[in-house]
Every structure is written in C-alpha cells, then in structure tokens.
Length: 471
Image (tube, rainbow, N blue to C red; front, side, top):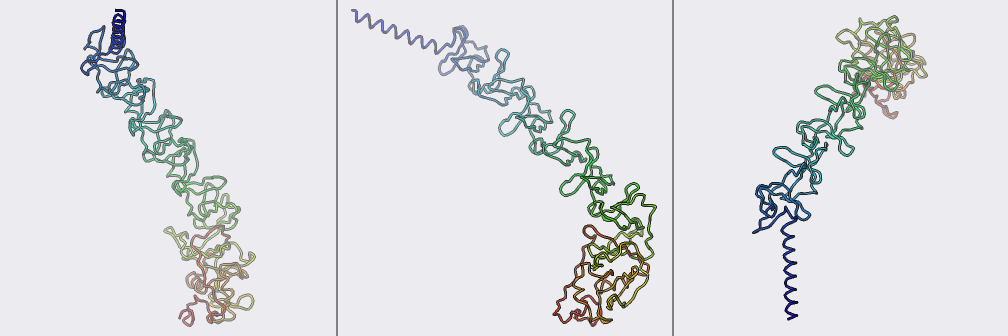
C-alpha cells in the first residue's frame, strides 16, 4: 500500500512538472504571449487569441512580429512598438541589422535593429552607398558628407564614385576626385565652362598665380583662369610672358610691359642680358634684361630691305628674319651655323652692311669668299682659303664651325655666305648679341672634313660646278 501511494505521488509530481513546462512554453507572460496550434503561432491576450493585434511580442528572449494575431514569418521591414521603430527580418526583430529598410515608399536608416532618426551620413546597401539625413534616405541631397574622417560626394542621395570636379558645401567650394574630397590637390579644374584654381582641395578665390595643367602653364587671377590676360607675371623670382591666359614659352625677343622693355627668351625674362634687341621695328640696347622708358632710345633698323640678320655669339648661329604682314622683322626664316670671334672679338651692337666683296683678303694673308662687311674690319665671309682659289680651303677651320674661333669676323659655310651676299642688299641691318638659351630655329650642323679626304680643300657646300663634293 505504501509503495502504491509512492508511485501515485511520483506520477502526480511528474504531471505537474510537464504541465508547468507546457504552460511556460505556451505563454511567456501571464497576460500576453504566443501559442502554437497546428504549426501556427497565435498571439494570446489574457489567455485568448487576439486577431486584432499587429506588432511586436516578446517570447522568451526573442521579439516576433505578429500581424492580425498571427506570427508573420514572411514579414521583413519596420514596425512601431510604443514610440520606437524596429527592424524585423523574416518575422523576427533583428538586433544585428544596420542599414536601410523601406517602409511605404520611404527608405529609413536602421542601426542595430532600431530606426535611428538622429543619424545623418552614409550607409551601404548591397554595393551602393546612400546618403541618410535624420534617419531618412534623402534623394534630393547633392553635396558633401563626412564618413569616418573622409568627405564624400553625394549626388541625388547616392555616393557618386565617378564624379571629379567642384561642389559647394555651405559657403566654400571643394574639389572632389572620383567621389572623394581631395585635400592634396593643387591646380585647375573645370566647372560649367569655367576653369578655377584649387589650393589643397579648396577653391582659392584670392589666388593670383601661374599653374601647370598637363604640361601647359595658365594664368589665374581671383581664382579663375583668365583667357583674356596678356601680361608679365612674376613667379618664384622669374618674370613670365602670359599671352591669352597661357604662359608663352615660345616667345623670344622684346616684350614691353608698361614703360619697360624686357628681353625674353622662351617666355622668361632674362635679367642677366645686356645688349641689343629688336622690338616693333626698332632696335634697343638693354641692360640687365630691361630698358626703362625704352621709347626714348630707339635705334634705326632698315625696313627697306627684305631681311634682318641677327648673330648669336653664344650659340654661334645666324638667324635670318623676314617680314610679317605689318612689315616688321618677326618671322625667323633661316638659320646658319657660324664661328664668331674668340674671346669676345666680335662686337655686340646694331649695324648696317656698307659693302660686299666676291673675294676679300683677311687677317693673316688668307681669303674669304662672298664677304659682306658689317662694321669696321668685321665681315660675314666663308671659312678662309689660303688663296683666291676654291680648292685651298682651311679645312681645319671649317671643322671648327659652331665654335668661337675667328679674329672677329663671322665665318660661314660658302653656301650660307653666298646667300647673304646674293640676297641681302647693302644697308641690311645686322644685330649682334649674346644669346642666353637655345635658338629660335634649330642650329644646323656642318660636315666634318676628314684630313685624309682628297676633297678636303673644297667647302662641301660650295656651289661651284668643279666642286668634287658635288659629284
């Protein structure tokens, strides 16, 4: 009897435990919870099914989404619980989710399962980054936004990785490169047809400078590239010629700015130059690269002849200038290699040719073909011959063309000396000066004559039909 009573008590206790467990499993609280029947979970209120309820319910430690009293495993989206909006995925509140969620046509920003109305910034959704403002995706926003110390460019609510150019943020314009504000950029950028100057990522309205953009230098004033600018601009101690907004590195000669005439070579004023220069129909003598009130000191240049001859002592090169449409000598037409006087024996200055000679005896009892006097004892002539005979060329001096080697005259190939003799009338102006860089036309080279060559007594360029070099 005692054993039977013990068995009955054990059964009663077991049933009590099972019933208790079933009660806990079906009802998470005394009032509201979920109950499963035939595979469907129902929302229970005060122990009864409530098909009017839509929202969240907590079951054990998990929150579920109920629609019309039934747990909706298919629902993904937002739902409001009291005054807070939560993100549900497949019927379960997803505390791990951070990103966008769409609700009735509007996209919202969720952070760790809760809609965050305080968030403004970027968020990634699949492979695209979007701009959120106060918790809502703002399709109307175009501009900058900061994300983890980097500023990005947003266009109509989407981060635009393809954009390079300017954008305004409050009252300042910034430079964006491939969607990211580039604080390191210094240079030009185009915005709606106008070029602007950027300094370290910010449009600099105060800038006056020249700047390099893909190999070309441009002039900027007030932060804008000025296509109408024609001026001299000083940059790191050097003066540059600006023509139509671009630094003109092809400019050679005189450049007047205000009351001063400057000597320009390759677009840069040469402040060490002292000597004559041709400008607007006259010659002027400059000192240290400039001449103040130059218009008071013109030196006549003869424009009644077809050419102006210039001799560059530094580069041992003669440049022949023809006339432009205004009748001024601005068109470089020919270049001749030459030998000027050693040790500065060829004078610098402006001269007019007074006389010519088919042959002319030179210093040292030698002779020059096709000689044209420049001034005093200084002439253009061929490389010397031992006598008035085309076959007696001093070939060793011919091989020195391109170096300063004469007694003061300008030695040329016979062909070039003959061209001056034939084509440049008397009173042709000759300007002799010291060049400071390259030449406006490439300087030609001369053939080197081998001392063992049987033709060595002839100038290879001599047009004489008897010249063996012509055979």
